[in-house]
Amino acid sequence: MPADAPAADPAETPGLNPAELGVYFSLIEVSSLLRHAVEQQLREAGGLSYVQFQLLATLGDSPHGSQRMTTLADGVVYSRSGLTHQAGLLEKMGLVTRAPSPDDERGVTLTITARGREVLAAVFPGHIEVLRALFLAPLDADDIAALAGPLDRVRTHMRQIPPRSAAPRRRKNAD
Image (cartoon, rainbow, N blue to C red; front, top):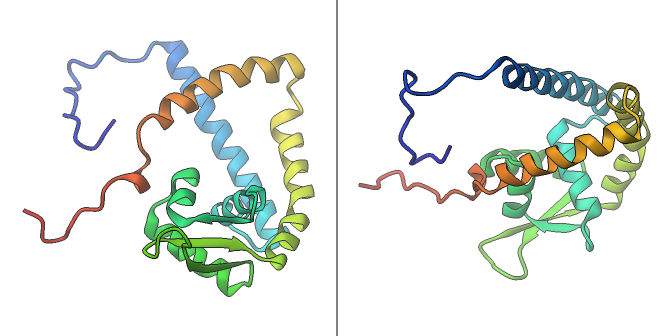
């Protein structure tokens, strides 16, 4: 719900039916269990947090290994300040560099380093192993195809609402 939308009256909001509630709880549990296992593997294999891995993987997939920080924040759905902190940690580890954006001097571009690519290469095999063992193992090709459509539709629907990182910044002394 957008930040400026009026809050719904709980008395007027219809509840979820058992199927809706069940699929919601299943999604939350699957997501939590998978994320926990992935985070553990990333920490052990590369000393990375989940967000740091997302950033490195996104940069690794970029044509030039670089992206603007605001674009990255929107893509990984992370706050600007949180991303700045994570980028600083990655920079201290020698996995990325930060520089003024060539297109806009107010912007900052993050670029993956050769060391960052090495860490990605080190964590990917274990990452794929965790995904196969926990998420993909109980599914066949038909199941995967059946999940892809609805999940893509939900993601597209949710992406229509600008992420928090894209929201205009509020001034501290604004009226």
